[in-house]
Image: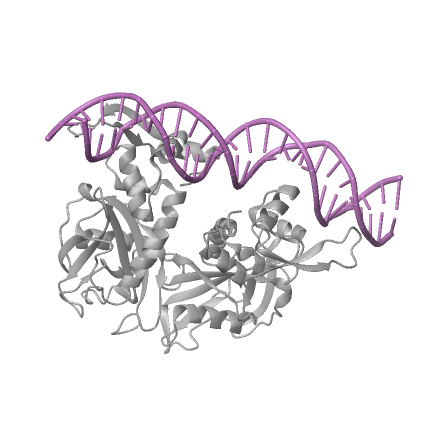
Length: 231
Length: 231
DNA sequence: GCAAAAGTGTTGGTTGTACACCCATGG
DNA sequence: CCATGGGTGTACAACCAACACTTTTGC
């Protein structure tokens, strides 16, 4: 959390923290910043900060994320508020946590504002974070496991064109469990959510797989007609 | 929302609002209070108020609910924070919404603190509420529909001993749809969640139904062993 | 007997799960 | 020819939806 650079124009009792999950083909990553100032200077933490009086909380989350990390224009969803008395040492601060999923390759990281560095960390290799940030991360991971089974959010983490195997690896990374290949393929294809690109992988040392893409419009149409995305 | 009676000891930019759902055998109810003071004096609104500096947000929700309505000792779960700039007219206030399910019969309502009245309203017959309270209610109803399908929270709304028909009516009220009696019975009984009381209804003008009770311990055991509660 | 709700049975279709198996490609 | 992943087939069990039917009780 940055210091009160703008203390006159921000709400001082409420902060924002963002969980940005990324995927690089194997494990799940989380985006952290290194604090360049303030009481946690030098420590890695979740990107976050203060809300201004004239911006919606949802807007504040997007603005802070962009200024701290360079990541912009993504759909941030609210996780929940954390408001224990002792969660922040200096004074009473309630934080509202947001989370999002992005494809690691699509964003150039650039530390800014009060952040001196930005970096992806494997979610199982994060350092000890200040305040209750580790707790927030744990909560977010649990929420993510639940959400990914019921809504097609996972596709944000993949390249535009992807193979069925890549989706499966993503789901295995998030859910932390093995899935049966034939059954997973069928389940996904039978939803008619994926559009075949009529292209194959290249430069792989095994049989080339077909590429698919996810189409949000088709998903919206199907859900309106009463299809539910499950697993 | 009460006025700043304790303005020195409360966080002035954050409030709490509670959605308390009740059930009386037919429709779903929501608990509202009539404001006895402040800018919304005389209006019906969600019970809520300010958080003190020395209490956790979760605690504040329980305290406020009790002092305003007399309803205490229930499990309040956080819904989410609402933080649009214009949601509150006087000044910038972010609110954190909580929700809970209670059996209407188990609680004696008594208006207190800044509330001049308390009353149950059918969720489809609520008056126009101040601020964004109608939006919060809508959000809570949607959340409730989702939650009740995946976790056995609904049993809070029933008497200790209940018939299968009563559960079905409850589910039909929350989900706003008709359910097939034989299939609903079987589904519930096959989960082995319900303990038969070996008792029958009395004084009913039709065949008396068997009474069951819900046992949280059994539920916890079963979920540990990997059972999932669905529908 | 009638109404109202309790409770049981049956049937056919869908879905999930656990596999065995063959195919294509690079090294 | 082997390792790696792509991709298909099958067979059994479990589950679900729809609906017909019998039972008990008060009036």
